[in-house]
Length: 163
Image 1 (cartoon, rainbow, N blue to C red):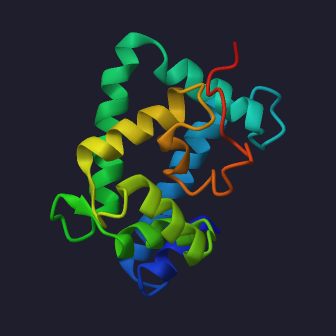
Image 2 (cartoon, rainbow, N blue to C red):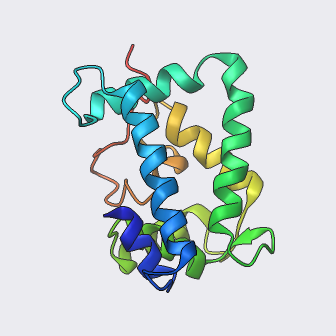
């Protein structure tokens, strides 16, 4: 599972309390997401359900502030050394949990950071907002989670709101 992959990449002992808590937390988050996004009750979240869920959650102006709060928590989680910047080493751990090859993670990180090697909070939050809200398939934020590798492909890029 994603929780086991992440624990492994973080070099956590699978029997440790931290690994168990991580697994419990990620399962709880997925269950919460499934309850609100799985509209056809098939116990799976389709791409359309996922996009509609986030469109409804974050496009409403009052939820933009919530997006900033959630973005800050995600950033703190990825920024393992808490230096205020995400390094490539920290970034590749998260993408590795989703089984994104290191070469593709490196390419995405270079695009995001314009080869500076550092991803600060403001850029991270800007990219997160673009990833969730932009209808521009070429938006920089589409690379945040390693989705939009090949610039000619659209994969999950494109409108985040299904109008």
